[in-house]
Length: 371
Image 1 (cartoon, rainbow, N blue to C red):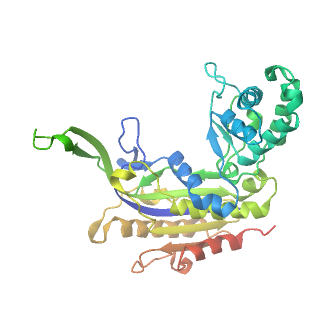
Image 2 (spheres, rainbow, N blue to C red; image 1 turned 135 degrees about the vertical axis):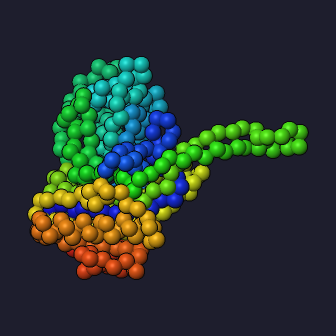
Image 3 (tube, helix red, strand yellow; image 1 turned 120 degrees about the vertical axis):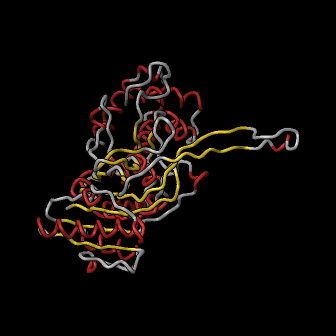
């Protein structure tokens, strides 16, 4: 079973996701330049949106090189001296992952850690505290065995919905790897995009009248684009990652759907405030094992005409969806569509329309196993 999420989302002038030159990311598709928001950017915004943790009822996980800081906080909260906690945390981390050669309190790569994992590790350290600290913690066999046990117990499974959805990859410690249950495409504009530049100035308030001109000047890149977004969740992989916990997997799907719709990348929002919700949401629950990205609906760039880019993009998606169904069949699927534009007349999605986000979420959850 697979859950697909398709969206049309139009953003006002913005720079939501920057490249190495501080300009909005872009790419070529269909022979023309498109605006782009990377999948990494979308996933981060999704997992960090408050609705995600609120819906799953599980604290959000932390991606960091400083697992030692998380452990020190947990240990000192239980009354252990800071110096001892730091020493034990560094010793354990060195057994758990490869550490940085220059800074012994941080790992060489980012590690995705759940609150539950930190709690389990700190509880184990507290239980064996006397044996660990009786000598140099760095030479403690207890720590070595504990690290191996924790790594083994978390192999291919987690209690954290965000890690289950987005996966964890550590090339140096493959035992900790978890295959992501979700696939998130880079969002691309449905149309050709031209880069624009904003020349800005700032006035020095204390020298007004003493000199002409600005206290500083600068240039920032931006664009405005209507994006197509696509995400796919592998239900079976999600349940496996969560060690068979179906109720938690259901909450994870709901959390992902809500957060994916509501989350907006934070790049330069103070300057642009492009807080624009999706204009179209299409959810698909499939039993046939297929997956359809609808990006090719926009291989020929959409042109605005009198109705603008959003409506033209929605109609292009609807037409392409109908073509796919006509050629490849409906399969075993259930669809629900939500549109902000009542005036749009759909060819194929009309029977799938629902009134609001709650109805769309309910339509997805109804198709998922209960246990």
